Amino acid sequence: MNFTNKVVLLTGAASGIGAATAVKFSELGAKLAIVDRSKEGLKKTAENCLKHAKSKDQGEILQLVGDVSQPEDLECIAKQTIDKYKRLDVLVNNAGIMEDGTIENTSLKQFDCMIHTNLRSQFYLTLLLVPELLKTKGNIVNTSSICGMRSFPNTLAYNISKSGVDQFTRCVALELGERGVRCNCINPGVIYTNLQKRYLDEKAYEEFIKKAKHTHALARYGQPVEVANVICFLASDLASFITGHSVPVDGGRHAMTPR
Ligand SMILES: NC(=O)c1ccc[n+]([C@@H]2O[C@H](COP(=O)([O-])OP(=O)(O)OC[C@H]3O[C@@H](n4cnc5c(N)ncnc54)[C@H](OP(=O)(O)O)[C@@H]3O)[C@@H](O)[C@H]2O)c1
Image (cartoon, rainbow, N blue to C red; front, side, top):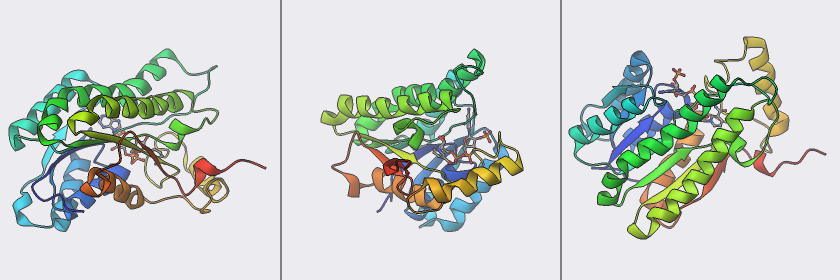
């Protein structure tokens, strides 16, 4: 995999899967624009990227503080990326949030926030940047979840947002394929990040993470770098004949059936 002279825009890069993916792209030679809500988090990721950069020619990393659920922020992110680099080769729509909630206790506000953050953001940032991706015959990798392929109780809005990501990915792949732009998504199982720690207390998180031993065929949870590797593969020329695909990075969880 080689991203020398390629420009990658990656959201949700201050933490977890996004932070690991930014470092991986940097190791592989990419020029990066990274997005998140946390200025401090982005700074830390940028420092790690520079430490691991393949070459000095990759230059400074563009750090864009913004909220992907806000259309005006997405417009600014797209504009600043193109103003700086004059091109885009890879768009990674990764930022996301997760919360508990059923059909009986999810408020309309929570539902809208989940959809706007996890799904509408991917739609709008992609729409804004398709003209640039067509010029470079670039590609898109969206972060979905195993929850996009399977249904789990008590994460209703999250599951729906991620199913939307899988469908969005296939539609974009069909619409842009003939013009040389690929679009895929990854569907992680339980990965050790801050995602669930933001809404579960310490004890509940420990129980949740322990359960991965029984819910994943590989009998463990995953690490962010194991997802980053697959995102970079899909974005690379090694995946030149893969589009419209949802790739589970889930230790076999998608294949499990309770018995
Ligand atoms: N970890 C898992 O088990 C798992 C499994 C399947 C799928 N995923 C998906 O993987 C992606 C990355 O999650 P992660 O596990 O790496 O979690 P994470 O450690 O929480 O990282 C997600 C990053 O996205 C940022 N973000 C969230 N909402 C945002 C917004 N509106 N605007 C800008 N940035 C925003 C978060 O910032 P804040 O700190 O401000 O929220 C955080 O820095 C998500 O799409 C998630 O759904 C994760």
